[in-house]
Image 1 (tube, rainbow, N blue to C red):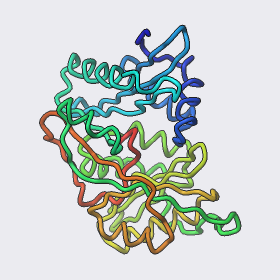
Image 2 (image 1 turned 180 degrees about the vertical axis):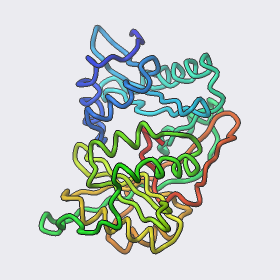
Image 3 (image 1 turned 90 degrees about the vertical axis):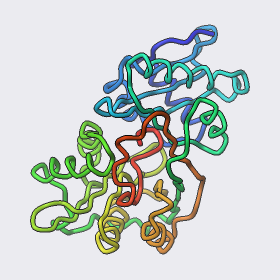
Image 4 (image 1 turned 30 degrees about the horizontal axis):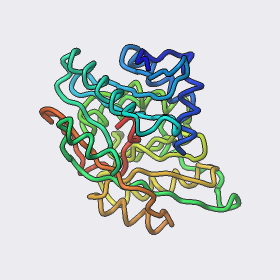
Length: 284
């Protein structure tokens, strides 16, 4: 076994591993990891074959995100995931990143607890499957459109909500799927916003942030109207009762639980009370 840095040449292998696991990432997502953290993404090799991955992204050095801890099904239960996870923690410690965060599955949670991660809040992945004819045409509403002029105010609001600047990710989401980016403005300033990604098998709503039930519903309906996919995914913050109710009313069903966990001083908590849904467990 050999643990080394991930490169762009490894992206097809990363795609293979996330497809085998039923995950929704595309090549664009893997490029996001490597473009923003070229020295913080790792693979495990066995006889020159990549059998595992792990990624990190640092947000303003306030905290870093650990994600994409994947192991080839044929090589599981050999400690590969543990070695990759320990490598990410070691790398971030060496960079003096004070806080690490991740979104854990029930299977991974005990391992993360052993490494000093503690629970911050709970997340529920919800999935909607709809017939193709139910995918509506694009919403005809300029009131909810995010244009270039409005994008930067959204980035500033997101910094307060998320706890750090991740404008590079939001701009990337907007470039790839501008039709899935929506906002609700009041007096010219955003007070609710949502972005979307076109994944391997589903469109993914997130981040989804709102200050009121009305604005949350406007954003959700806009996303549903603009998406043409039969399968839709949302990683909903379970404590946000409004978001859970709206999603349930639209037919979203629970798929799997996730736990947001943190290691180190959680100084920059952001505003979880305004989060309807996260960007995704791989990004935060």
